[in-house]
Every structure is written in structure tokens, then in C-alpha cells.
Length: 314
Image (tube, rainbow, N blue to C red):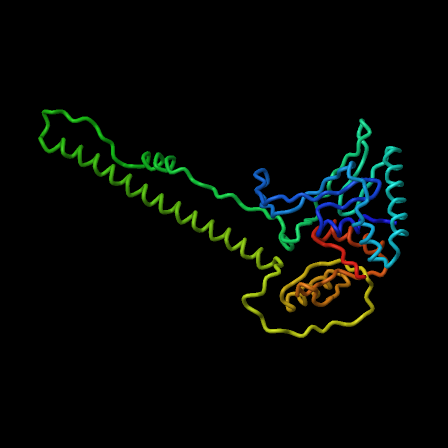
């Protein structure tokens, strides 16, 4: 029996999921940040770690699986303990364990369990719909360099004058110096104004990009402006219990557009209706066999969208 999908689902709602006799997967909150090497803005998330010392059964995982499969607690406890035993046996034989959507486990040279999180799924529900995106850094020009270039282009050459020459020549020298200073001041002001305009333009472009991404993201708040309702012509067919979700939308119109877009790409897209949060859900496809659903989900994450996830009905 595979229990990694149940662990992944519980990590969205709980910060500690114990696998009896094996260890616990812990979720830690992480604030939003900026990756300066790639200029990427990263939303708030949960990071996953593993602690082999927390192996005592707390009942959470077993109760959840028993409820999902509608089986007895004691029966499921034995199955989960058997899975833990098989995992430990694989690690002792030098094999690694890959838990889909969670991470990879293996033994180090000191016979201690090491864990590498997959980091493809954001388990923080408050960041649902948000993804990392790259921002173009603002290129700031150096005012001093432009002023030096302008100084080289000024067509005035000031040469020393002899005192014997007519009295108006010294005043010409001072006038040239004054004119030079005024020219530099006006040029510097214009250059500063151009820099201000460029900065404002770049900020507006960044704000427009953020607004576009926010509009594409999904939030749980009520819509400030409701669009007119539309009717979706959806062909009814027998659905499985396991759906590979492509997105959830506030507007039914956007859900319909997403279904048509996925169908043009060759997916057997489905409109699943409204969930408990009032969002219109769209799936890439629906499966009766959970193994087929997990295989398809892995394919979609690799080729289409790493934000896809699996929804299993009771």
C-alpha cells in the first residue's frame, strides 16, 4: 500500500505527520523572499523536514487513511506498520525511498536517515494560487558619467588673456565660465528628469506585471466585481474518484476558458463544479485507479505545470 499521497494531503493542514515505527514529516513556515542570484520573488511557503526520533503513533495518519478507505483502525494500523517495516528494510539494504510530492529518503555513511524535500509543492494553503516569478532589475544610470560626457562636448575653450589687452576681455572670460555653469546645470536637470521618467516607467511596468499575476492567481476573498454568469456546455461523462487538478477559479467564465484551452492541447479536461471554498475547479483528467492518476500527475508536473495536484474523493 502506498501512503505517500495521504501524507502529502495531511501536510496541507498539519505541521506534523507521524508514520508509526518510521518517523515524522514536519512542515515549517517560511516567509516570502527574493533570490538575488536569479532575481526571483518567492511567495510564503512551508518547508518539509524529517525526524526519525518521532516515530510513536499519534493516530493522525492511520485515522485519516481508515476514514478515506472506510476500513477499521486496527486493520489500517497493521498495514501502515508493514509499510514502515518495508521502508526500513529498503534503507538498510542501501536503497533510497522516493515519496511522490514529498521528497527522497536514504541512509548516510553513519547509518542515519537523510531527507531531501522535493520542493515542488507549496503546502501553505494561504499561498494557494501564488507562484514564484522573475523580476527584471532596474538599471540605474550614473549621472556623473553623463555630465562628464557633456563636459567634453561643450564648444568653449577658455584661454588666458594678457592684461595689456582691452578691458572688456576679462569680462568675456567670466561670462564664458558663467555660461558653462548654467549649461551644466540645465543639462544635469534634464538628465535627472530623464532618469526620473525612466524609473517611473520601469515601476509602472513592474506594477502592471504584478497586477497581471495577481489577477491570474486564485484567492478565497469575495470578488469586488462580479462578471455576468455564463452557461458552460459540458458533456457529461462518468468520472473517476481521482482528479488531477489544473486550477480553481473565482469566475465560472475563466474555468470554461481553461477547459477549452486544455482540450486544444489534447487533454481530456473536465469542469468539476464548485468546491467548498466557492471556487470553480478544472481538472486535466479523471481516473478511477489511483495509480493511473499518480502516474498522470507526475507526467503533468514534468511537462505542463508543477502546480498541478491530486484531488481524491471519498
